[in-house]
Image (cartoon, rainbow, N blue to C red; front, side, top):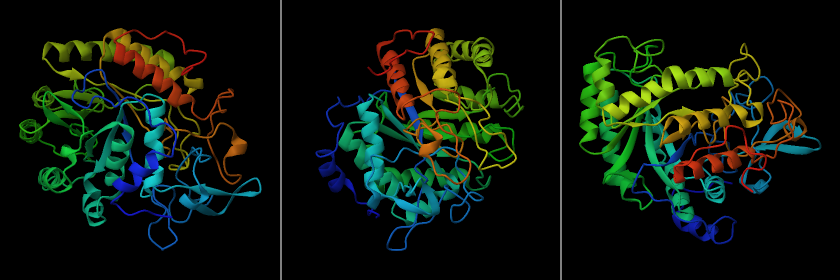
Length: 419
């Protein structure tokens, strides 16, 4: 079953009959002390009327050979009518299902989880290469997000991902699309759209990476684009992990230092840059603390990115299964602990719903027996623990409370988070 993009009235009525609708509204007037998630919203599946496809779930129809996700979402709170049965896949003697973010009920439930666990909200991913398709489809997922944020009191902002953008056109694409979002969709007029110092927040992810897939090559062009948007927004720059030293994943041209310095907020991408608790501790000493000192000196905000683990075996079949283990939440928790201990006040967690790379924080199944019988699946018992499907939402709630209060986290994972 699929809902149209004008979902606001539907979701507001649904909010009255689904759990988790009583939490306080998040303050959307400031970025300070926020913990935000990336929200892909890119999953789709075929509906009864023939619309949709298996976007991001698989390469074509899902099967053990084509599946491109490693983790399986806990779908126990969703009605089968709101889901898509996977052809040929079962869990025991029952059909296995997937979901579509084009379904307003799905997105609402995700935001109700954020509300229930006291989470602030999301940076909604918007890929430059997918803008035309999204607009042609009425920006259905974005409108679902807007309605769900209103129904649950969560905040949200746009985060452009420029991966694969064309160097000659990507900057104008962003300018034109931002004009469309603000003046046609009126996204920044939404009462829950995140603002900071009186300006709407906008994130642009990917400039400065050294892989040749993220334009522009010229740092002066990047700085010009940052300054264009800074006149209109509080600008978050999703940068290479080593933006400060111009090493490793960062472009080496010294002109990038000026481009990074022009940003209001620097959000380095750290996924996969360290792979153990010891390495996360070393990252704090060698990168996080010097990054924070540099940005504080320049009057900028530091927004480091932390992640629960990583695995993309089904997406890249030659890659290792469970490549960066979650360690029952210890890996995520140590990163959050290090950030707070260093004095960080704003945080991004990657990601809320990203199960292609197994960084998802939303509810995923606990045991291998709860995932489809067919194929490889990474479940929460992989590291020898019996965890509830909401374990990472509980941890995120504890992390968020600490950031809100400006207090330190315990060094060790709490035994009963969220209780």
